[in-house]
Length: 159
Image (cartoon, rainbow, N blue to C red):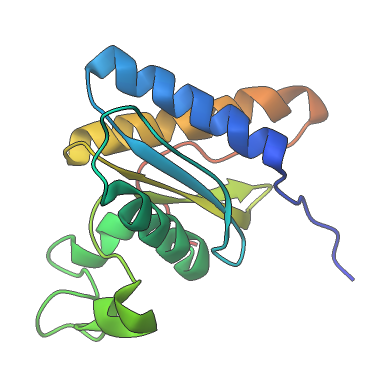
C-alpha cells in the first residue's frame, strides 16, 4: 500500500485564512472552499458581504480540481482546452449534475506529487480568484516546509 498525505481541517483552515488575507489585500469578497481528494468539503468560508452563490460555485471548482487533477481554467484554455467546442470533452461541465466547473478559480492541492484535495474560489474575477487561490496553496507549502513535504504552488496544474 502506498502511504500518502491526508489533508486535515487544520491545514484547510490555514489555507482559507491565507486566501482571505490575500482577498482583503486586493479588495475582493471571496468564498473559499477546501475539499479532500474526493472533492468533499473540509472547510468553507464566505467573506462578509460575499455573494450568496459563492459557496456552491467555490465547492464546484474545488470538486472539479481535486477530482480531475487539474486547474479548472485549463478546460477552456485555447486552443486545446478539452471542454472547448469541437474538443473531446466539450459538454463535460454538465457532468455530475452540473457540478463540474470549467472556468477559472479551482486548483488541485498537490502534496508530494499527489492530489490530496482542491481549493475553489468564487467572488472575484479570474485574476483575483487566482491570486487568492495561490495564496492558499503557498500557505500550505509554508506550513509543511519543515516536514520535508513539497506543495505545488502555480496556477496551471495538470497531473
